[in-house]
Amino acid sequence: MPPVREALSRDRVVAAGVAVADTEGLAAVTMRRVAAELDCEAMSLYHHVPSKDALLAALADEAARLVVQEAAAITADDWVDAVRRRCLAARDVMVRHPWAAGLLAAQQQSPPSSWALYEQLVGTLTEAGFDDDLAHRAIHSLGSMVFGFSTELFEPDGGDSTPDPEIMATMAQHMPNLARMAASVVHEVDGALSVCDTRAEFEFTLGLVLDGLERERVRRATA
Amino acid sequence: MPPVREALSRDRVVAAGVAVADTEGLAAVTMRRVAAELDCEAMSLYHHVPSKDALLAALADEAARLVVQEAAAITADDWVDAVRRRCLAARDVMVRHPWAAGLLAAQQQSPPSSWALYEQLVGTLTEAGFDDDLAHRAIHSLGSMVFGFSTELFEPDGGDSTPDPEIMATMAQHMPNLARMAASVVHEVDGALSVCDTRAEFEFTLGLVLDGLERERVRRATA
DNA sequence: GCGGACGACCTTACGTTGTAAGTCGACCGT
DNA sequence: ACGGTCGACTTACAACGTAAGGTCGTCCGC
Image 1: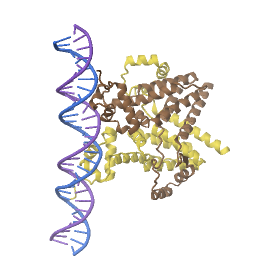
Image 2: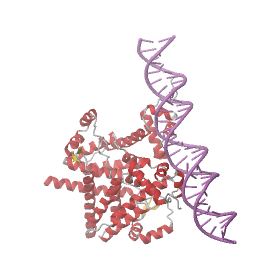
Image 3: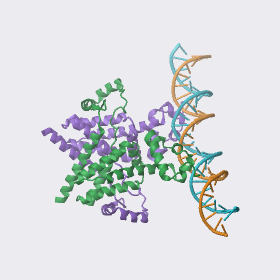
Image 4: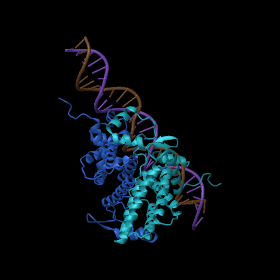
């Protein structure tokens, strides 16, 4: 009779890491916790992953791979639409796996799967008439957006709807512009009041960048 | 005779944390290491900060405070210039303190000092004729840029100039566009070859965003 | 059939981390 | 003088990453 448990493998270790990160946060991704997920001991993981940092790098690569996978299915008429939809697909992955953006940003070496992403992107842009320099800049612009769009950075309270009234009062006093703006743009989301609809704001910024890139492309083409 | 060592204080603890992070990286910021910097024991720090996470949050706030400090001194004629210079000042802080961007992005609650930053920004934009909605979007666009601009994300090797030729060869084969682009935009920096001049790329993206925001402002004003 | 090499997994153990709990001494108002 | 308070130190523990070595099932040459 073969062993009752499925054999470990690098892929299973990475998958377990993703599962733990998704359900309990990145901080819960410890060798012991991942091992427990696979019903084995921590040290067994080292037969498939050289270290915890390498496991985290593999998680980052997995996130990029998911983006590549989604992005590959996208078809569009013009480059703006193609790139916009790819960026939105990337953002979807970042939202589904909240650990992904931070982890990708923390890698010293960009994961191989992210290269595939850039290859797709540069291909699209080149085909649309971008010179290499502009394509390069476009990658930086879009990359900083997708990976850097910080969902919570501006939200005064992190989802908690218990704003200390004293703090709010002094804030309104010392930050009149911010207070007025926050009161003005508040809107309803899922039945709860919220200042930010990050999806809409992401699309807005994306539009700015894509618009500017197209304008620059035309400028260079006619120069 | 008074005690020979200066008394601890929250400010001194935070300053020591910044010093350690600057010289040895964020990972070296442990309670014991910071305590050693102050010539005391780890547990003594808990009289001034409630936990390590709180210390890290204080470091993030300190980084934002540095930005506010630099940004307050900036004067400019039009809003574009004012905001551009403030963003560049913020980026300078991120470059001087490489731990800052990641730490700020990791905070669940945005640090108080970052509110001050947004207040400055909204004030400038409002004065320039932005409505509250557009100012709000502008903050998200610029914030995602400043905090998210990832310096190394696209660099194939993290500064190491030992690109495995085998990997490079297969990469060139599977990623023709990327390989061509990389070869085309390579340039010299500090006597070393490099693909990316992140400062220039930051300014380019910043220009795109500022341009788009000004265009949108005019569009709304004349609508 | 069988010995022995090998590889996947487990056990044990060490150093480091964050921090709870308790101790000690210096200062301060009375 | 003296108890209270408070800041720093000491001790201790659980959880972490991982080095070193052990165990056991599987397969290969004979």
